[in-house]
Image 1 (cartoon, rainbow, N blue to C red):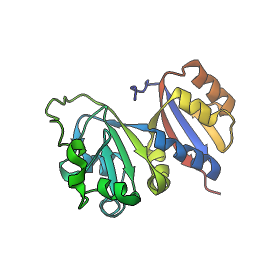
Image 2: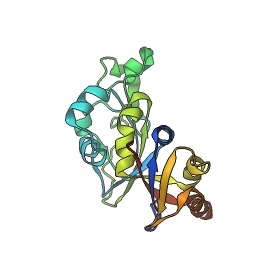
Image 3: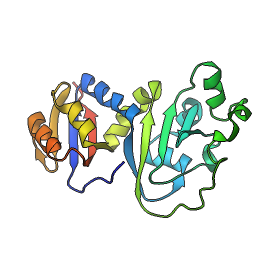
Image 4: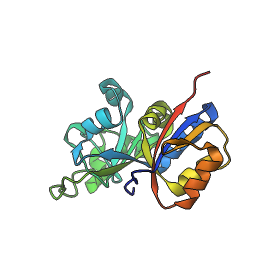
Length: 202
């Protein structure tokens, strides 16, 4: 995920349909800022806003850079990494990929942290690409969107261009409406935008 330009801030108010559309974007990955390398547990709690009980009971399948995680407490994240979260996946493969699976020995060297050292990581700030799937996306997606995430301009303009589900839109410090926002995004489709989206309450 590219770094977000300082003035590229989008604020949206969505109805129920609009929130469902934006939650569906999370499977494709959004950027969450980090100040440098940090523990996975800290990232889940502080950056994603998840309670310890939710992490313990609901996050059963965790991948970092495509590798399944067994130990949250000893897993390190760094800018540029990709984190994928899911409930337990079905079938034998799903069982093998679960957090601390009893069949984890079948994975060979694909388990995160087993294949390569991470001692080369620096201290630069950046973003972690977060992907949320199935029930996890529905449960924590709205909260994550309310906190704010980075989304590429091309994906964002496709999500807002028809205006469906969008109650109001701001770009930078100004109300702009859907048409104004679409024009701004189309002018810089390769930029990454910091997006906050909240669902309106009747």
